[in-house]
Length: 118
Image (cartoon, rainbow, N blue to C red; front, side):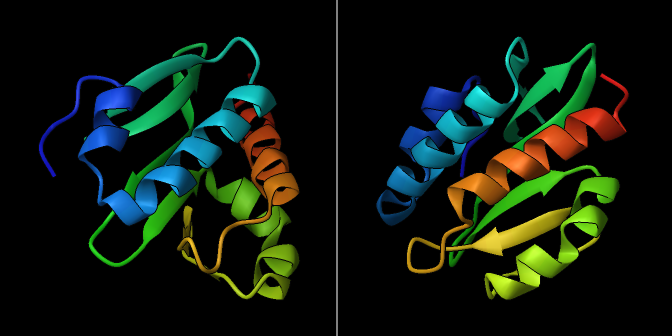
């Protein structure tokens, strides 16, 4: 993908099959992080609170990713595994066929905001 200047252009440049999932994650993060600033950092759209990036998302060739602070992943590791998703220290991979449940996206975003002290 090319470098995006905002969330809309990032989503528009993503593989077509992933665009609905990315729009959904964006909306969920926006709702879970009121007052957060939409940013693009490290070539990924994200949300910052008081200058700290607390959540971001990305599209790749075969999957998408949701990225939050490590404490949020740790706090919700059982829920992530129960949803059949794979997690790294700071992210979860998902696809349109296996999305992150809406309520889990919101809890991860809130936990990440809390971990950032924002």
